[in-house]
Length: 74
Picture (spheres, rainbow, N blue to C red):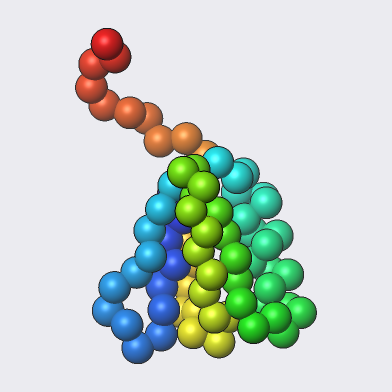
């Protein structure tokens, strides 16, 4: 699933693919914001860790569960 994170006062966004479900990502984001945690931590499908300050969050967009891939499979 694709996740996009927008940051305040920054024209670019953070975009990556994750193996987590939409419900898991939503729960993680909600818990970080509601508990006044200073950071939001998410992991992409390659194992990279993204740590974002919660006070800099503008939005978190959670995409579809599985994007349909285009092309041929070898």
